[in-house]
Image (tube, rainbow, N blue to C red):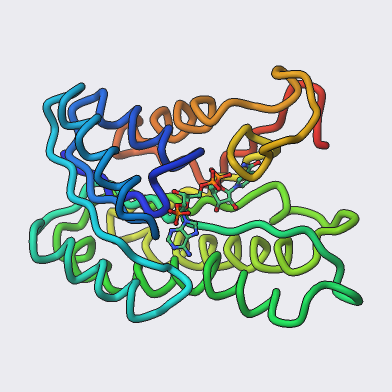
Length: 232
Ligand SMILES: NC(=O)c1ccc[n+]([C@@H]2O[C@H](COP(=O)([O-])OP(=O)(O)OC[C@H]3O[C@@H](n4cnc5c(N)ncnc54)[C@H](OP(=O)(O)O)[C@@H]3O)[C@@H](O)[C@H]2O)c1
C-alpha cells in the first residue's frame, strides 16, 4: 500500500504521514525544504521500515506540481491514497489584504490540488480504485471576519472536491473533503491558547485513516472536525 501526501513535513500532513507509515504504507511526499524532507525520510524509514520517496516542490508553481507527479509516476505504477494537503494561510479581508494574496492562495491551495490530481488520475482510472483526500477547512463552509482570500481558496477547493467526487462515483475511486477547524501547527505558532483549545494534527490524521479504512461499498464524502469548544 502507498500514499502521496503534499506539504507533509509539518502539521497535519506530517501527522497523516506518520499515521499511515505506522500502518506500513510507503510514502511519497513533498515540501519546499529539502532538509526537512531528508530528516522525515530518515525518521520514518527507521521507525516503520517503510520506503519514503521525497522531492522538493513549491506547490505554488504548476511546473513543480507536474514534476512531482512525474517523479511519483516514475516510481509507482499504482496509487492507493492521495492527500492534497499543501496549503498556505494568511488572514485578510478583500478590501485591504495585500495585493497578490488571492493569486498566492489560489495557486497554492487550489491549483496545486487540481493539477496534481489531473496528472495522477490516469493511474486511478486505470486501476479503478483509490482514495483522494482534499484538505479543505471550516473556512470552506462560511465566511468569517478576516477570512479573505484564504477562505475564498478553501471554498474553491471544496468545490473542486465535490466535482471530483461526482465524476469519480462510478469509477471506483473515493473522494473525501476534510474540513478541519483550528488545529495546532506552525500556522498557530505563538498563539496564546490553552493546549486543549485547538485540535491536534493527529486527530485529523485519525479521521483520514478511519475514512480510508472503510469497505469499498462506503465513501465518507465530508469530514468536519471542530475543537470541542467550537471555532476560534
Ligand atoms: N492548522 C489548521 O488550523 C488548519 C485548519 C484547517 C485547514 N488546514 C489546512 O491543512 C493543510 C495543512 O495545514 P497545517 O496547518 O498543517 O500547515 P503547516 O503546519 O504550516 O505545514 C504546511 C506544510 O506544507 C508545506 N508547504 C507549505 N507551502 C508549500 C508550498 N508552496 N509547496 C509545497 N509545500 C508547501 C510545508 O513545508 P515547507 O514550508 O518546507 O514548504 C509544511 O510541510 C493546509 O492546506 C491548511 O490550509 C489547517
